[in-house]
Length: 110
Length: 118
Image (cartoon, rainbow over all chains, first blue to last red; front, top):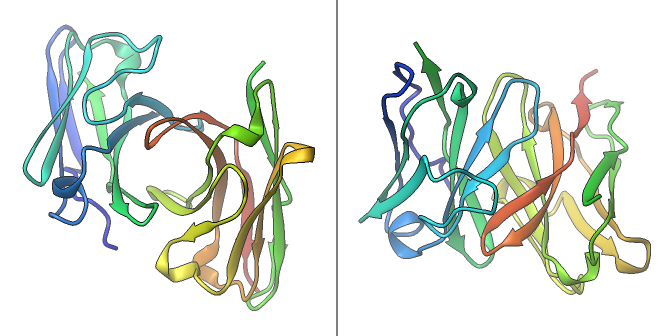
């Protein structure tokens, strides 16, 4: 199973929005509504910010939103803050209790 | 406090074996799917394996099938990863995580480092 494709980098100024894409196939993203997103700061463990495409775990601000169209999922971070600077990974279910992560996108807050 | 703590990482030669452990606390371990995810130095996350709450079945990424075995002991609130026939490309930080949401891992440990090198 090949990694899902994400842009290597994205950036925005404080207060602006940034959208990250995650492209897969009909065997993963396109086949299931089980896409999750993780935020990882350097040297830290990943943190779940979106699950089941658009749902947010308790405590995650609504500045983070997820969506999906066909074989591509997206994460939008609105009202960018300095602490949003991190690497973001998508993850999709691929069937038979298997998963695949995306390649990761480093978000820079300008 | 809800947490998981990994241990067992080490330097091992190619072809060698290692057993990772993950001790859970603060939640009813036996009711959750659990998973191992790894991250090679400077690289992205890679799903390795996961296991049902009752431990009856484990699932693996293709490159570790037949070499790695995921297991758990619910009486000890512990998750394991037995790694055999280790290769250079298995070098990574290995995380243990809980599926607290459908297809979403909400609790992660800090990881344990596995280095495969001669």
